Image (tube, rainbow, N blue to C red; front, side, top):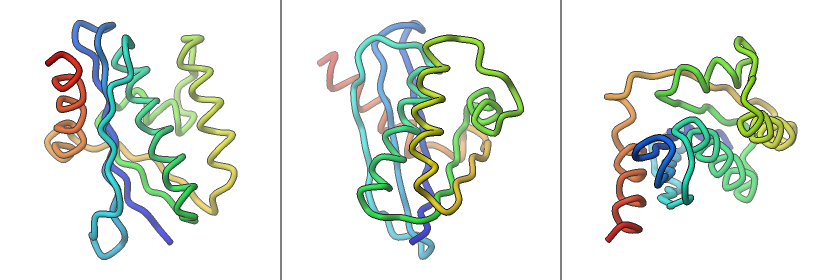
Length: 134
């Protein structure tokens, strides 16, 4: 099974209250799962990484074989594609966790998309933060 996964992470005040949003579809564009979760205090980049990790773990549970990730964070995409080094130690540990888990898949790709194309994942991030702050 191939999954197309849109992820987003965000923090208010960066760092601050943070949330993740993940939306996954199959190749016929059927929604397979979504995640909207408050993750406590984090930076935007930490939240972005945690969203990817959450999507990977859920895909693993569903026994998916191939994953295509779409993120609006160019930095995180370039780091996950090994174009940029991960210098921040907190991000480095998340990077290692992601790389250890993606070994279980046949193929995993990370692609950058404009923010406007990631509205559903972004909405889930804001829902998670708003629900926690309510």
